[in-house]
Image (cartoon, rainbow, N blue to C red):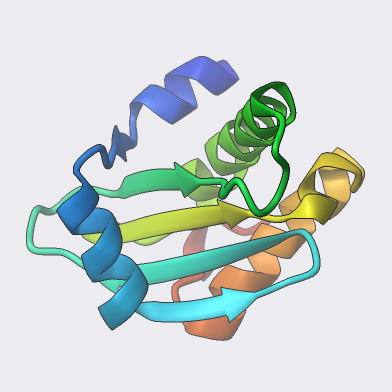
Length: 125
């Protein structure tokens, strides 16, 4: 049995601004109540994920960091099982991200993956 941290480390983290901008401008985007997902294929052969929470969401860095931690946990649970390989995912936090129950955020991310066509159905039980 893997822990959440092991699931998250299996996915590379996007750190450079150029990749974020490229994914957000040229990729597919889907908005749910709890989060926004931007998705774009890559040629690297691995899943990559990045997180963005704007100051427009909340002026408090403490609250933005809490939202980011919640998004990391959701990504570890969902992307490790249901996301396709060779794809970049950028998850944007919203005000509702801090308040929605965790299981609802998980369903939000799964729903976004299904709507964009990047949901990997093979692992679903």
